[in-house]
Length: 193
Image (cartoon, rainbow, N blue to C red):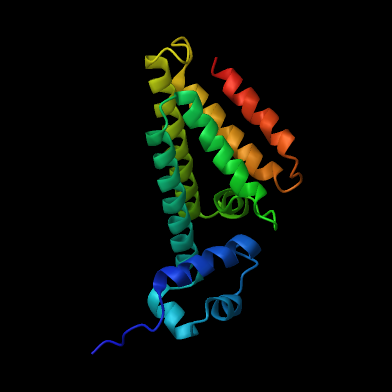
């Protein structure tokens, strides 16, 4: 008969996200994980696999949470520009509310590992594609309503906005000046026409 787990896998996964986000993949040892997750080494391996598998599961859980927020914002807003502004504001508010200024977990993973870890690279690309699609959908809807000019390439604008988000996610590591980010958001919205 299989043993039942005496811990909540999702709660442990959230702790893993925090550890990896704070220290990075290479900076987090197996002992850090055992200590920080509050489970034994054998339970860690039995439940999540090795460190790399746990890291991928942490990235996936983070991506799922992030994607759910984006879908809600784009579905709830009546105006394309409002939906896009809400996405940009959500990103900045989350970043500025983090006293440790860790930046974005996905962006950090991309910088640290994507160039030499294909699994991480695939997850980063998937996350970026999700954001790009959310922006493109909002832009096309705005074009249909006459809010955004139809002469603008919705895909190119979506890529521009996606890159704007990544830039803000990196910039927060060196500045927490809200007006700095408000200028970027206002300029990005202005580009939409």
